[in-house]
Image (cartoon, rainbow, N blue to C red; front, side, top):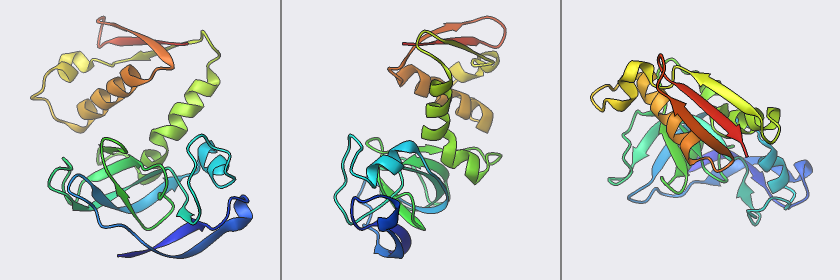
Length: 195
């Protein structure tokens, strides 16, 4: 399947990006195809098209690490379904009308219906990098309502807000840049200390 994409043709920066048709890979059994509705520009994207990022992609490649959209095809082992609204961190390939992602290697998360495409596309890397940049080493951030009256611990509760809070808590827990403490007071208070 062909998509319109921003293709990096040489590791020379912005001037080497071209808008062109690009053949998108066929999703494997654990992968999904996403119709991209929004994508965010992150610092790693700027570095990658210059060959300066720690993970190097060889040209030609589709630029963009983070996007949001609708699953249009899902392999039987992907854990997602056609029609799911998702945000994804794909490494490369987000600046296209179609992207393929293979969880868990590439992060793909369902998003609530209330979340806009723009918010979802910037939620993972852009927001996470921004908040960490605002905190100096040893800085502390407090996040209220992270237990949602205990609903996040009850697997039977599946509403969008509870799922988003579970996803947020897991993301914080897995982030090696912070030390966490979850206090079971009120609706839950998470304290994150930047290492």
